[in-house]
Length: 132
Image (cartoon, rainbow, N blue to C red; front, side, top):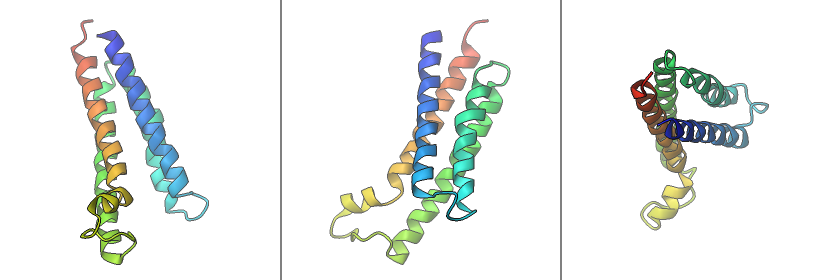
């Protein structure tokens, strides 16, 4: 069980660091102050959530914070997907090439957040059920 916990923790860190790197690439904080929030939430996920999952007593707080950040990211990126489709920011037509449209939309990034959330949930379940 302990090796699975370590593997899930490494996966959680890898997903959150990948999210942070993507946010820095796509939304550089030096361009607009509003871009700072995306990187700030990803950085919080990478550092604070990881530290909270290290202890059994604080794992529930790690789960709550990871869930909050994950759901916020999913909602914000889903909104961006809708707006980008309506405003024509995605240059590929959904009806002509739905796969290319899906790949140019924020959907792949939403899947990273879903994987981060599910990894955190599995890590929480293993952390609280491990024998003392």
